[in-house]
Amino acid sequence: MTTSANMPHPALSKGEGSEEISLNEKNKKVLSFGEDQVRRNRHICGSCFFLFFIIVNKNLINKLIAKLYFRHQILSEMKYYLSSYRFGNEVEKLKVMLPPGSKIGHINNSRDFSGANPEIRYKYQEDEVIELASFGFIVESLDLKKYFGKEDELRKTLYGLDGLWVSGGNTFVLRQAMKLSGFDNIFNELRQRKDFLYAGYSAGICILCDSLKYIKNVDDPNDFPYEVNKQIIWDGLGVFNYGILPHYQSEHFESEDIAKEVQQCIDNKWLFKTLRDGEVIIIDEE
Image 1 (cartoon, rainbow, N blue to C red):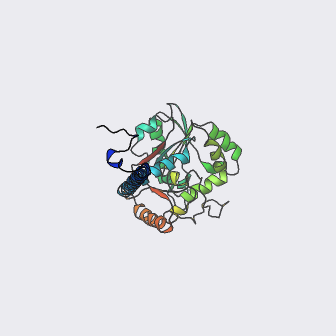
Image 2 (image 1 turned 180 degrees about the horizontal axis):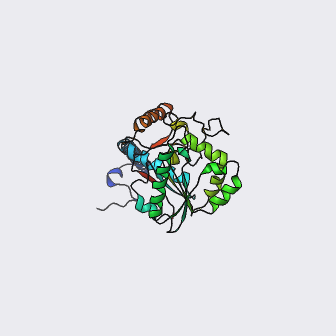
Image 3 (image 1 turned 135 degrees about the vertical axis):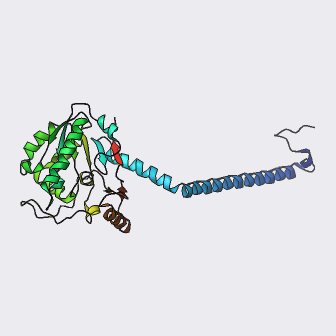
């Protein structure tokens, strides 16, 4: 005998109709309870698996979140080539970030720090200018000291360039030169140009953070080589709202002090990103 889904089972057809209906209702409740329990068990298993996945892949997830957050911070702005030391290991990518013949301004004011050897300072600048030229760029030395109190003149010069290379040295000294020349104001205008390249290393990339507190033990905040300024400037250019710490675990004379800065960031719960020499951050939305 076959049994229809809409008919009572023969084993339940003995007796009166009211008893038959009552038994069917009880079975429905039992089935409903069983289905609810299965759904709850599935939900619990799913939650446990998700939690297990997060625990096992915590580092991967943190890196992914940081990467997405990092991209969000600089979306729709100028191009960036940010090296830990000198030109880094991504030179071939740097060469194509701007077309051949592009004009690059070379800023070396981070080496204006007190006691700097003029010959060494010039040698660094000369080497970097020659190398940039070998990439196919037209390079112009850009001394911000010449523009102290002449923001409009500097604006005209910068607007005639396709990019900048900002060298390493003392980040606090570089920040003073940028403030006194009005570079910081003009930079906020240049940031909106997607065809403009900001490149550099060490102090030249630390300056892009929201604050210079991250490197206060590596660079001397109390160095005032310019007579017109005797006050520490703590705010950076504000591209990133966290610290960038170059020369991390590298064969660089500042590497040991950078490790102390890393610990300072951890102790104070400050966001930061480390770079080893050779590593480069590249942001190019094209």
